[in-house]
Figure 1 (tube, helix red, strand yellow):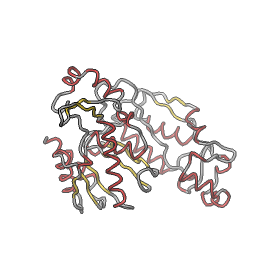
Figure 2: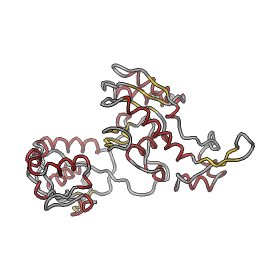
Figure 3: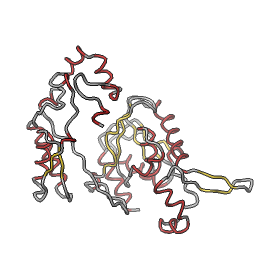
Figure 4: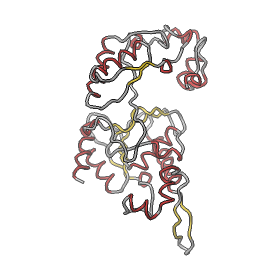
Length: 325
């Protein structure tokens, strides 16, 4: 639609100065046109590659129907789609006149894995742009970070929302989900809540910078306050969240998150900040107060594991991640 083309232009403007080495898109018109509009807004756009591995989930019996029609015509399948999408199946005619069962979501996840296995080896150390659809994007994110098909409905993808994944290597190696479904470039501070959502919506904010952050010192449960940069960051978070309706606020009692929360809540004077001990930082034990270089001298293997296999590390006289979990 015209609104869709305008949103695609906003994505192009938001990403204009980033150096992309490749663009991949679904060949379906809505994704291909989005990719072409975004590319036109980039300072230096690389070639656009179209691949069937980025096509949207195949819901052959439902396509062209509105949601209410699907819910009425296929009530059991629709409920399963919402609650157990990995088990939802469609019975479709085969070429020989028989019927076969097709499971759309497991097939979509296999398609996503095929895309990563094909594309990642070609772009080590590069930045690539992928423009596709809600369903396949969810499968791409899920297969990258290790979520199984039963969690398909746990991830939302807004029209022209931006997500950022940092790969450390091939599919199966650790992946950092840096950002998920950003929409602020479209003028929406937060993604729109899906129809039918009834539970709480949580906004998770990390505290602003401290001097020890800047010095690369492990803080843990040593109570280090914000520095001036951290207070400025908190103020920017406050300005960003000012138009957002908040109903409650809770923070760790430690100085750096507590002050961050207090700065944000200056824009929301009706909210009383609650403090909760369960939100304190991990206890780094003997590492607290030390520079990373010092820790490397004393605990070289443990520090290496902390960067690559953090779930295996027991902090000396401190905690492990299972305790934090």
